[in-house]
Image (cartoon, rainbow, N blue to C red):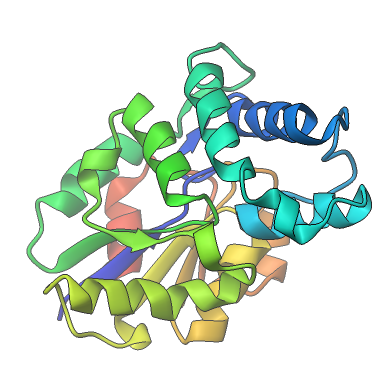
Length: 226
């Protein structure tokens, strides 16, 4: 049996030291002259599209005016990702785990993230992690994160990968929204407390398995293939 393993990015694979938030804020201010536009808007676990829509609603920006935002944001992200920031880096155990999973014939690696696809690539290429993933589902056209799991599985099928159902998929993420996304789609969830939520919060969200981090690669592998 082959498992599809779908990784979240921010807080799960890497922390960018705030590059994404800075780039989004700079883009919004550049386009709409609103300083600190995302203050008070929840971000962890959400799609870029839903975050942007909330900011637009909060500051009276019409939806049709948002069209340039993505490209302006990506331009700033390419600059911001190079800057130092708090806790910036690859999360513990991530590279050894990806090396292990990439070498197994019974595992298919893909992404499930609220990032725009090009933003996901910028972030992961910076840390030399993009090469591990064959495809995924991204936040470009998904205000609702719960719609991403079927999109990911459909993309895998379309690329000639695997024709598997959600019961053979495992979502690995760091927020209750990652757990909810897996549950809504019928997949299992592995939650990791390397983002903004501790193990108690992730257990309360009903994650199937919870780890402090991904450094015990054998235990994570066992949780994936169970």
